[in-house]
Amino acid sequence: MIKITTEEIIQKIKEKTSYSEEAINEMINKKVKQLSGLITKEGAARIVANELGVPLFNNFSGKLKIKNILSGMRDVETVGIVKQNFGVKPFTTQNREGKLASLIIADETGAIRVVLWNDIAEQASKIKIGDTIKIKAGYVRDNNNSKEIHLNERAKLIINPPDEKVEEAKYEVKRKTISELTENDRDVELKATIVQAFEPRFYYVCPECGKKLSLSEAGMVCEQHGKVKPQEAYVINLLIDDGTGIIRMVCFKEQVLKLLNKSEEDLAVLKDSPEKFDEIRRELLGTEIVVSGRATLNKMFGRIEFVADKIELPDYTEEEEKLKKDVESLPPVEESLVEENENFKNDKNSELRTESNKENRKDFENKGFEELDSEESHTQEDYFEEF
Image (cartoon, rainbow, N blue to C red; front, side, top):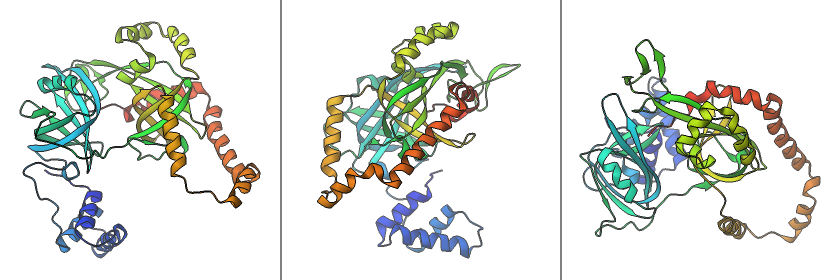
């Protein structure tokens, strides 16, 4: 079944009519009210689209732009520029073993994750950032409200096809401060300093879906796939600080190895001798990093946390260029504001912001780092990495 979200319906109406997004939302809310709350907002949006003569499902055949790809579609064909390549990973199930890879591709209309299975996953090792790839016979799945194109043995992937060209790739990892993060932020970049690191935690996951396994009389069991051959996974929790706030950051698998500059064999040693992490912790504290990923709301504790997808050390030449662009994009400052800016520290609002930031830090400090670390076992279910 092809799925389309309320936001996608609103966007289609906006593109095909002269109505603003605010006006469309008013029509949808009015429809919900007319039907006495008997339908959802999505259902009302579908009715409004139909009344306005806006087709929601069309152009399913042939090559699709990324923005027109919907969850549930099959035999999808599209072309995009590779913006991220997460590499090839092995997986094991009760009945078979295989390989898995994932990419982020983009065109002028948007970006989407592509997941490659088994034989076709091998091609990911040949793909470089900036390559153009053409996909045929992919199918689309929804993963945590994000669309993904999956490629199995029926699919075809062509690297740098000579007859295809993408003029522009609409994909940007937006730099934010910790204080600016919201729970819906994805593809966000932070520049921050590690102020605390906790020992890695080891657990077993399903090799098929990546979810945490539970122990039963039959052995290790996945809620979705039943009894499976367990795959060991690990996670590290950090506290990072960028001067505007402090936040817990969660690192899984490859990002743990990259952050610690260790191999899987080295991690196995830490599992048996956790005291050896003390030296690694000392090296990590004070390290400045650039991390991209997504923000998520920890519902148990009511706070935003950050899940890392990619961790790097800052390229200071690149950082300087970013700073120059930010400064150049600022509007001209009137002379009358310069003096006001000099007195900014005396401004009451500045004092309030400073106090707010102090309170944010106290929230962590009052709990104590040990207590924060103990929370980890209760919150991991929110973070399991899935493709």
